[in-house]
Image (cartoon, helix red, strand yellow):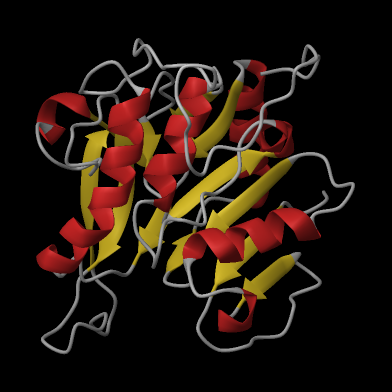
Length: 253
């Protein structure tokens, strides 16, 4: 079984894992998630298939052959972006988990319990974020801590490097997908994530402004979902949107 190409953003350099085909993207690749992930896309070359983008504090615990089977299922249903947790409706706050998560959320992920030092406790303890486990398509966005994007999608979408730092890149790439009629889904894969979930709200609000302003000019209304109407390239000048192919796309999805 050929491993899925995987890219992990890190601060410091780490050696390429040839056995599992994992490339670590340290800060020399860029000072934001979008820059690092675009470098990853450029490094793929002639590879065709799924690409995994996963945080360095996340771990996939489902067997690789099962992961690949789940992704084949997603591809067969014209879904080219897959994650483990996300939302059907994206509010103007641009967070998949807020508000109305009880209604809109779907997927499943395990979070490590952290101690007072904000590091995982030993021995390991986890708690479930169990929104609606299983395969679900028609999502607005999935969480970027672990997501897979099929190379077919890169013909039409690319990470927006106007998005600074390490937030909202996942929302933006998923909305690009929706605008290009590319399916976004969750798959039943177990991922364990170590994250404090303690964001600087003021900083997050500053980072949110660009993404909100961008998509509020593109979409007809909020919340954004698979039924949203998006303005065309001819109707508005849109920053951070790659030029789309004019010829018919024969690729599945």
